[in-house]
Image (cartoon, rainbow over all chains, first blue to last red; front, side):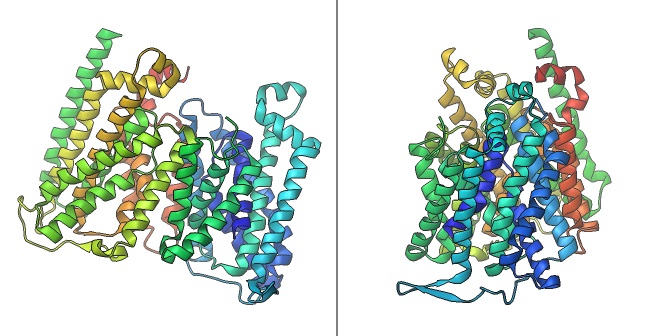
Length: 277
Length: 327
């Protein structure tokens, strides 16, 4: 679970680290990805684990389009820039939730039988549900891929450079909007991957994103804004803390542990664990 | 600056008094209970948003956890009333005081945080409060508290037969929040806040006591929001953690100020007057189908307004001032 939180959070961290915009619609991106894999399963009987790359690709396009159509303009605001971005992405979130309710109805859906669903694997005497294990593996692979991508390829360097100094980058001939749209696409693709995997073992309904969004922000902030590695580490910590509190407190209070750890960490290190000062 | 500033302030006060007077007369002509209900909610959200604006708009410490103080006001009042028979008026004051104390207590660690870390910390603390109340059996847990009916009286702040007393209380609350903002705008604190918002380091170096002025803003803001919470609880006669402390509420409180113009005197009022009736009308006319059309309209509108008018609707009235502010 922690690795999945990490995967959701990495997408958010990428968008944030890239251009200082918090995407308050991140949870809704997740929700759409879950619906996508649901419908791929319902109409074409494609197993969510197989359709994950497809969903990720679709989400990539979606993220880039959202950036070009909406977010691009929010970033132009000179006054109250922070608030404009918060409320633009928040408005988007409400809009997407409304659209989901309109087209998909508020009913809870689930994917009844996927290839891995319901199976368990015994690892050293501990029974682990298979979908979660696959999710963990995919998360690690995606994270490694992203890390490689950002640090080893030209486009990754362009992303980093644009983040550091958008003005100078323009002089070198890099189109800021293209880079940012790509970044949004990538962030959305990562959350799309997470959504496809989670569709196997979570109910799907229009508000499902909201329950993960706050944990995703906490995860990113815990690791430190601007650090992709931090977000991944934050995800693992959040997963562990959640599991530990679930043992100590009633299940309805399990998120309290996560929040408490966040507060504790930022009081000691106001920039998160791996955040740049 | 001095002459025009004082002149503007005097003009603002006169306009506000005139508007409050007009609003007070409105129920003479508007007898429809549904419309009265919307007017009460509008006034309440204007008051809440104005209070939120003190900390988040003027002082620049964006809080998305003000639902915590709202919930504290509501719960203090109702717990005191149902468990100990304490009159809501005292509960209201107690709730306001507790909220102010908690706001200052949280200020110690929170005001060290900057930007998104601060915003997330406020969301998180409100969420912790929500979860604790949902699991607190004595306070009704997730079921909430139903306020027992004790008949119409100002003493018990309960009215069954007519909504008008609630209307007038909401009007008083709204006027109070406006007046406090107006008064603080020209006070030492008001100037400090603007300095803290623009550039904390520079303010500090000029001798502004950054920390104390943030604390002051937090306390005033939390107190007023908690009084609003107490009002809401009496008005609905039923509270549960999700409906008074949910994250949605923190946003609902912030939205009018953001749409109207954050950090301005008239922004919250203007925002509430436009936003709340619209919300209520879309909810009752097209939201009934349960298909989320109201959410679509609402969401699209928020996006449109924040993109088209980043400084809020107030900027429409003062073009020149708005331009000066962007520089």
